[in-house]
Structure formats: C-alpha cells, structure tokens
Image (cartoon, rainbow, N blue to C red; front, side):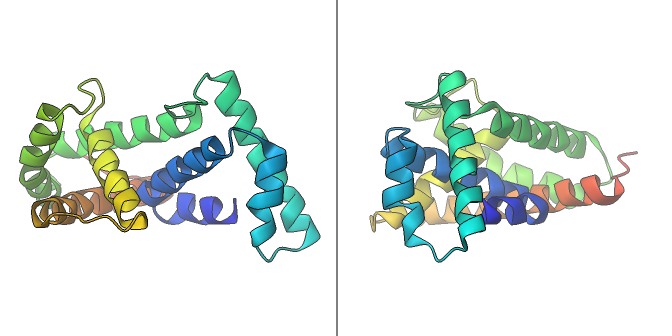
Length: 181
C-alpha cells in the first residue's frame, strides 16, 4: 500500500508491475483476507494504524478482484486504466516529431514485441502491455531463481529503456503537461 502510493507518483510502470505482483499475492492466498493478514501482513514491521490501513487496502483489492471477476487471472480495472493511459501517451509520443529518441527506442523494441506475439502472447493486448508482460515475466523468473537467457536479457534491457522513457514522460505529462506539436 505504501509502496504502491510512492510508485504511482514516481514511476508508473513500476507501479503497474508492483500491482500485478500484489494481485498474484492475493490469488496465492485464494483471496482470503484472514490468511493474508495472518501469514503475509504480519511479516511487516508496522504500527497498528499502518497494519489496519494495509488490511483495509488488501480487503478493497480482494473486493475488486471478486467484483470484476479476475480472481483467477486478469487485472483489476484501475490497473487496466493506467495501462490504457500509458498506451495513449505512447501513441501520442509516436505521432509527434518532438520525441525522436522515444521513437528510436520504440523501433529497437518492435522486433521483440513481434517475437513475443508470435510466441503466443495475447494478440489483443497493446504494445505497452506486451512490454510490461515481458518485464513482469522476467521478474517472476528471477524471483524463482530460474535462468534467463542472454537473448531475453537483451530484450529486457531494450524494453526497460523504452518503458522507462514512457514512465518519465507519463510523470512529466501529469506534472506539467507535454507539448506534442
């Protein structure tokens, strides 16, 4: 909860990846708030107020997962909206002549996006979400201490650069507004 608030303001892509991880944690506990409280939240050094806030936050997320029918897979609407905002900004950056470095980074990443989609990635998801899925997948592999191939690490490096730029532009756009023409 505290991390999510900080990340949302600092780096929108990290926020999305963090929230996907939180969704997976909730699913691992079968959307059982009592189990999350007992076995997960209890691990943190929190004040009583922080603990109650965290319990409320997880409770609200569980409610959203259930109401939106994504207790097994998928993402809650608030995260989908953020990804849509990132996608819209990506499209604006691509259409504007004012952001040649972003365009260049995108064209370095495009072959990886095409390859991911040819390997069975969801063809309905946008390019930004495909990139985020790659980053999340590699993050999960690392957490499981599984090997990541050099080719995948190269793709992650290029994708991280693009998504990092997009996150920086997202923050800049929210704070002061970007001029696209």
